[in-house]
Length: 433
Image (tube, rainbow, N blue to C red; front, top):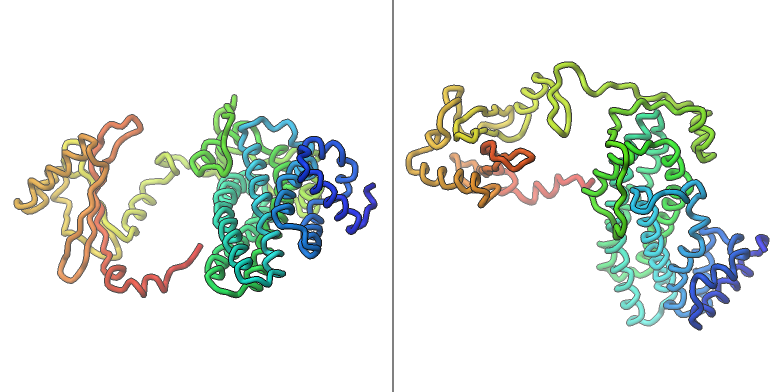
């Protein structure tokens, strides 16, 4: 059965579609056609779909193939090494996201193929609407890629595996750029180009899903400890998921960040890696990243570690100025920026009541703002002012600890003259990332 040619495979798919149309369940079909379907790879599905479109099979019938494909080829798409991944585990959720994205990508490809053959103007517009909806859904893929790029790749790089993350990120970035481009293209009547670009996006997404499920994810399951997955889980929940979390995974180990990892790959791990990853490790070698992040004297700022000299230079290099008044409304700190000067301040204001640093006519206003911040009525206040010909935005933010205790107020002064007076120039300089 595995030696079927593409035409014979297409006929099998058509038979399955007829069964689906008559009401036969996916599970029954999976059981009945299991042996035949083992000979059809996921990469052949778009080719078969293209043939079905050419033969005039109704598009809604072919769309049903998306759910069927994921259900029937789950065993092919997900390596056996991942069968014991717990429900709710971040790797389980990433696999579920790929199922969601694969369905959307396949549907997009089917509509794109149909658009390339459509002749009726109303039909074209209807297909464009479907494509637009799917593109909007697929633009959420950025959250999936962000979790892999920012949460998972650091653990691989710590182990000396840097080539795979760089190549995969480049492919993911191509998809993001193409999704951004087709949004503008959809406003045109260039149906041929829309069809072409939509198919490119669909096929590109499917290819990345295949690489993740067959190479990246099995490697991660071998390499990462439960503590590392615990850290990934915490951060991934902040980014959010494309699928519903019906089960919450509770790790037994405390979170371990990449900078805490000793990235040596053992012989046992090496043997369990997917062949592609193993070959890369054996031929190019993997040298663990031995950089020690935390140094003696570093300040732990919760989101990083920095020494006093670095902190001073950091504040001086910000394109804004800050003043900190503590819970007693006394000035304890201010920064001096390199780029522009905001309000006049000097060391003589240290220890001074913050309202006395402003004209008497503003004293009541300053007290009102501080009282609202202290009471929790507001978390911040924004107002605008002018200094000569400069337009200044002032933001006063309440500082609180993890328990919600008020620590003081931070005044942030930013010169936004260029942005406000020359908005087109600012837009021209935008670098899309």
